[in-house]
Structure formats: structure tokens, C-alpha cells
Length: 246
Image (tube, rainbow, N blue to C red; front, side):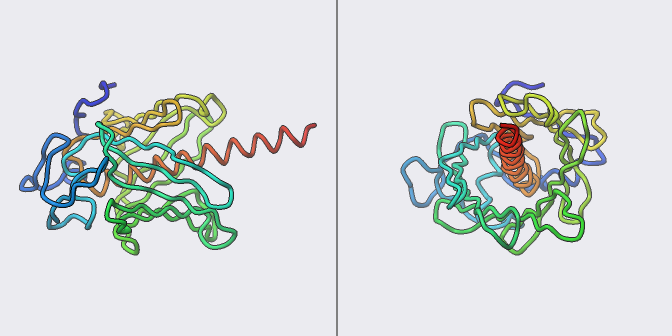
């Protein structure tokens, strides 16, 4: 496993085309200064790049993001700050708690308060544990799907055409998934580790190759928020069972 901050290697050559941006796009080390409003504690504005959904341009230049839960209430849901490696805010995410509609609905805004990403889980015929990742909202760019295995937690990362491009593999829900945990991001044939998702004291760190397709970076971010949601749901289920026994 690579150390935090390192640039990871890619999956097999057959997958590189689906995961990488064209060579003409800019790839810079994080963070870099750009023209635009200088918001205190936030990344600076990045000019729009052709082929990149609006609001995601900054992700071109980074290989690591941090997800920090900010607050949670059963009435209003959960809010997350999404930051770069020096603590500057990139996005703000809010997960709604609703009694009807999608069973999981998270909206992510940039520092101008523009809605740039939406994560949706709709319970349809089979109630498959899967989120759609939209950017901008209304346009699907990928999916994160929970695979049911007894001894590991596994999520498939897919592009907009539902082709699996990566796997996230970590401890089973039957083990100590509620504490500090590490999930490996692997190529779809599981032969290469290309990144990792680490949960440390309630904060998540997400690492990926610098030149990974920005849309897949966003799907990994969505999968991280979804993992936090699944763990929280499992924790509540265990708490209910414990209360019922008393």
C-alpha cells in the first residue's frame, strides 16, 4: 500500500483509457493558485475545462481528498466538509433524512454554493444497494454498488455505462468496521492496488492516481460518503437489537 500523498499506479492497460483524462488536460500538484474569488479557508476558483462537469475542475490537480463529518441530526441529516491536503474546503455535502423519496440523497455544493454533485439511492424493484452519482445533478456519471460478501465489504465503481472500472475492498460489516478502517481501491481484476480509503477518527482520506478520470474520482468520493452511511445504518441496527434484548 502506498503512503498517504503518494501517486498511485494505474490498473491494467486495458483500463487506462476509461480511467485517465486525455493527455492535453492540465495535471498539477495540489494546491495551485488560480484567478477568482479568494474565499478564506477554501480553494480558489478554477476556470472551466472542456469535458469536465462544471465545479469539478479543481479535482484535476489533486490525488487526495479528506472528508470530515461536520454535524448530524436525525431531523436535518448529516453535513460533511470535503477538503484538500492543507485543509482548504473544496465542497460541502449534505445528506437529507426524508420519510419518502430516495432512501439516500446527498447534495454536494462547491464554494460558490452551486450544486455540482448528487448521490441518489432509489429503492426500486430489488432494492439493490447502489447509488447513482450525478454531475451536474440530473446527469449520471457513474455508480457505486455494494456487493454482498460475508467476509469482506466490497463496492464496485462503475462508469456511466455501468462498466465496472474499480473495486473497493475492506473489512466485513461483521468485524471492526466501526473503528479506524482501511479500504483498498483495486483494479477490477483485483491484481493492482491503485488507491485507498482510510477512516481515522471519523475522518476519511481518499487517495487515487493524480491523472484518474475526474468523473471516477467523484464516484470514489460518492462511494466514501455512501460507505459512511452504510456503516451508520449498521450501527443503528445493532443498537436497536441491543435495546430489544433488554
